[in-house]
Length: 507
Image (tube, rainbow, N blue to C red; front, top):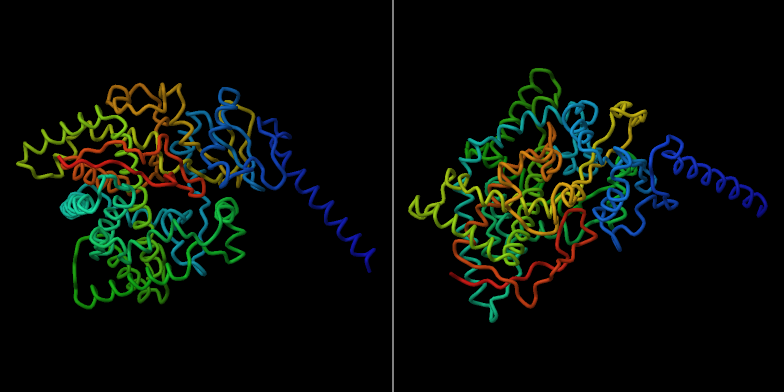
C-alpha cells in the first residue's frame, strides 16, 4: 500500500513539475523578454506583504523599458504581458479595442449577485449595459445633480468645523471625513437616501462602505486569485463580498424600487434610470415570455450596478480628495494659488458655487489631474486578448486569453514623460503641456470605449469637496503627517495605510 502511494505521489509530482516547467518557460520559448519567475508565485513573490502590485509592475517596467514593446510576466500561474510601448497601449485601448474589450474581472452572479456590474461584464452584455447606463453620466445629468453635491459639500464644511471644536490641536484625519462626504453624495445621487454619515460617522452606509475595504472577505492572495483566475474562481463558487454586505444592498435596492414604483416617485437620479430599464425588461418578458437581458434589468442587476456606483464613487473620489489635500499641505504656495482662484471665482457669483464656475477653475482641474498622476487610484489597467494578436512591428503574437496589463502608475512616474515625477507640479497639466505628451502617458480613468463611465461624476464631486474645504480652511503638515505616505500594500486600490493627518486652520 505504501509503495503504491509513493508511486502515485511520484507520478503527480512529475506531472506538476512538467506543468510548471511548461508554464514558466512560455515567454522564453517565444523569444519574449521576461524576468525569471518563482515557482507558483511567478513574478509576484512578496505581494501584499512586502510589495504592492504597483511596485512589482514598476520594477518590471523600469527594468525592460526600451528593450521591447512588452514584457512577458507570470501572475502566479497566469501568463500575462506587461505593456510598455505607448503606441501599443493606445492600440489596445482604442484602435484594436474589439480584440481587448474584456477585463477578465471576476463575476459570479449566481453566488455573488453584486459582482454582476458594468466593470465585470463582458462581450455583448457589457456593451448593452454600457449603452443603457451612459445617459446617467452625461453633462446634462451632472448639472442636474450638481446642487445636491454642493449641498453635501456645505455639510462637509460644517462637519469639519464641529470636528475642530472637539480637537485640542487642530490635527484631523482627513481620509475618513472625505469618505463620509462622498458616501453621502453617492447615497443621495444613486440611492436617493440621506445617509447622514457626515453627521454620524457610524451611519449604516458608512459602516458598510468601510467594511468592504477594511474587512475584506478574503486575504490579498485570494483576492488576487479571483483577478488572475476569474473563470476558475467562478467554478469554485467563490465570493468577493460577505453575505451581510450583499443582503444590505439588495434590501436597500428592493425597498427603494418598491417604494418609488408604488408611489410613482421620480427623482431624476441613477435609480430612476435603472427603474426605467427594469420596466422595459418586464415589458419584454411579457411580449417574449422570457427575459432578454439586453433590454433591461433584473433586481439583482440593478443592485449590482448601483453597488459599483457606490463603491467606485465613494472610495476613489474620497482617496483623491485626501491625497490632494495632503499635497496642498506640503506645497503651501500651490494651495494659496488654488485658493485665490476659488475666491476670485466665487466673487463673480456672489459666493455661490455654480456648475459653470466650477468648470472655469482651470487651476483646480490641474491640481486634481496632478493628484491623479501621482496617485492613480487604479495602479494598472487589465484587458484580455480575445483572439491571437500580432503585435505591430514585431514577430510576436499575444495569444488568445493572454492577460494584458497596462502599468498606469509606472507610466505616471516615468521621468521621461514627467521630469522629477515625485514632485507635485499642477502646471504639468496646462493645455500646452498636455499637447506635448503622448495621450497614453495619462490614464487614471483608462481610455477608449471602456474608460471609466463615471469620470465626470467622480471629478465633479472631488472638485466640489475641495472647494467646500479650501474656501473655509487652510491645510498644513503636522507632527503626525507621514512624509512620504506609507501606502497600504493589501488594498488593490491606492490608499494610505495609516490615514492622512493634517493640521486644519479655519480662515
